[in-house]
Amino acid sequence: MSTSETTNPEGTAPPRAMIKPFLILFISVAVLMGAIFGWHTLVGGFISKAMGAMATASQTVSTTIASESSWQSRTEALGTLRAVRGADLAAQAPGVVDTIHIESGAEVPAGTVLLTLKPNDDPAKLAQLQANAELAAITYKRDQEQLAAQAISQATVDTDAATLRSAKAQVAAQQALIEEKTVRAPFAGKLGLRQVDQGQYLAAGTTVVTLQALDPIYIDFYVPQQALATMQVGQPVGATVDTYPGATFTGKLVSINSKVDPLSRNVQARASFANADRRLIPGMYANVAVDNGSATMQLTLPQSAITYNAYGDTVYLVQKNHTVLQRFIQVGDTRGDQVAVKSGVAAGDEVVTGGQLKLRNGASVVVNNKVVPTNDAHPTPPNE
Image (cartoon, rainbow, N blue to C red; front, side):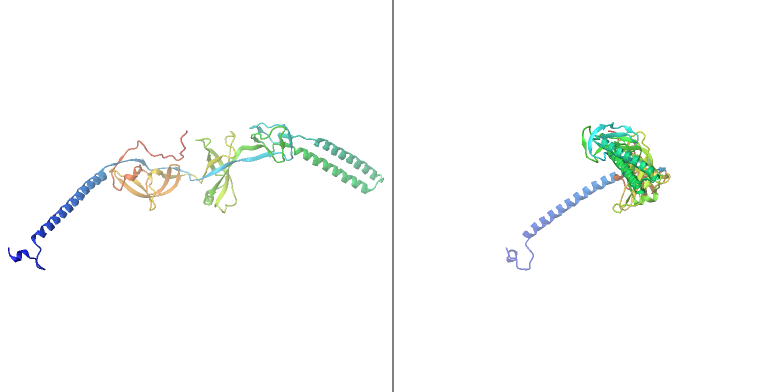
């Protein structure tokens, strides 16, 4: 063996024993990278095929035909029913209940005696004062005759006249005191539940029964100040209450408050409703709708057909080749499940109402209208 084969002076090539491990490492890394690249290419191919299959698959949707319908613009609000005349009746004087003439729930005419308190000695005091007044009247008449005969002075007659007026005033005051112990119906109406019993002591002002005039009946409600431009006294008003599902009561607007609430910027309005059957009672709340102007014809769609976005509202139109076209639209007012469309859709267009989330422009669709979203202008909750 020569000296050149056993030595490795500085600057000479590495021995063959060092090259072999580096070559093996390089080949291993190359094989591993190739395997990884091949796997990703295979997976990407499968994904591309799957996406392509999904893109070409027809999506099942429900549709409706856009059409025009009569549209009545309305202002809606929540209101509270109140009687045209209503009062909680009470005795003006304290005392013990003597007689009760109240039948809970009865209709009574104006002036009906409902309750009286024990009079105690009030009638006796009244009789005494009436006797004094009669005596003062006799004295005054006699002194007038004597004055005509110049038997007494004018001053005496004047004193007699003042005495008579004072006696009559005392009689009237005592009669008013007795009347304060009697509770009468100040107007015709329907009684509520009796709140007192015979023999019970009542302080002045204690409520004994409520009286409500129920026909007609008012509904008070608040609307935004913007609604004032379309509201006028005499406009028709509809109302519904939860007590009678499916029933709509009709009335008319009778008054609008003369000022707007500076805190809420709302204005109070009042509508009157016929209530001969007494189904509506004060204190109920109602959903109120005021018709604004006359009805017009407008193109409508179910609200489910519209996709609302910050950059614009859209719908999908079904084309003759069973593909869909996304279209931007301008919407108007809503009523129930429906919305008015001002532009973007024409009468007769077939519009997708269900299944929009899986659609894109040009997607193929299959129409299945066995189950469709609701499209009711005045929906009501189902009966329990």
